[in-house]
Length: 176
Image (cartoon, rainbow, N blue to C red):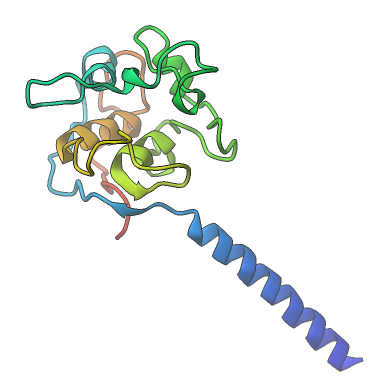
């Protein structure tokens, strides 16, 4: 009888290890370090800073934005995500990803759990590919990525961040 118990325990451990390995593979990797970018603890305006990146993320005088692909109606937008002005915040804040409902686009106060940050910061996010798709890695500067991180870390408000809740704590990105 003991042998049967040991075999059952080993089988359970093997199943658990397989589940853990599957979970570990879904963690983002190939992420850009934003550790050297000074944290913004307040004053990030959603409309200017975040929507501004969605509208035009190029800093070289050109124009290209997330809204070029992520536009209305959401059912035909890339990833079924509409990031146009006036609706983008409601389509991100606490909303489950179309491709994986176990992952949310923005988890307030938790950029490391937010698919939006993973998608702009990591070569291999939990879902899909690094954004902006079709552009080389590094298209969004570490400063732009840090702005998204800081906005989410401050609670991802529809208005302006105020720095009240973060109180100087900053882990800045994913462990490499």
